[in-house]
Image (cartoon, rainbow, N blue to C red; front, side, top):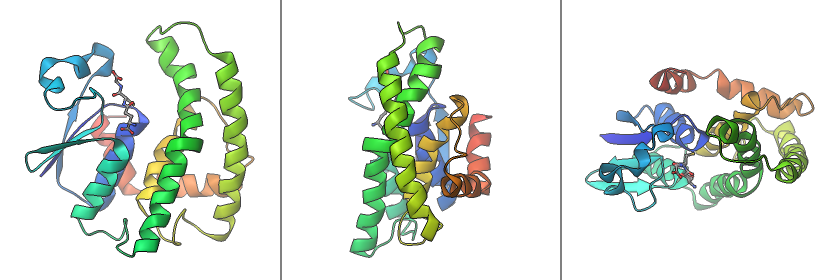
Length: 207
Ligand SMILES: N[C@@H](CCC(=O)N[C@@H](CS)C(=O)NCC(=O)O)C(=O)O
């Protein structure tokens, strides 16, 4: 059985969404970052980076949400991470795009609007927010064009890339960023938002 350590934020949510969509059996252990639990000696023994999400399986540990999503789908032989090499690369391509680009900008805006004030982490980075907003809008336009011809990001099928990307885009709610200008993204977002796997994952966190 898998054991996942996580918090409310998007990196943990990606892995929770994928585990629930796979129908995997797993235990979820909440790590309260607000209380500094990631810096406890017990947690430090499990991971050198002191971050969530963290997966335990078969006596091994794994960090990095992308690596965790790929691993759990792989172990489950799931079509959510296709075996075909090119199809798999397309899934990886979109996961990397969201980690490095569009998801990164949403995370920056979420950090500035929610995390920084909540944990009193100093002065807001207004220049950084303006840059994130500009690039997020440019890149949402690209994704909106892609989703005009397909319901999903890769290979015309739901994959771990969609769930991974969804967790980033989901941050738009907390920062009051409207998706109205991107109707295909909005439709894609809502179709994932309504999935039972997402509801089960949220119930684990009692969100
Ligand atoms: N690239 C990592 C990022 C992990 C990460 O930054 N986790 C944050 C929560 S979203 C964390 O654990 N922060 C606690 C800390 O840095 O002390 C991933 O995708 O898993």
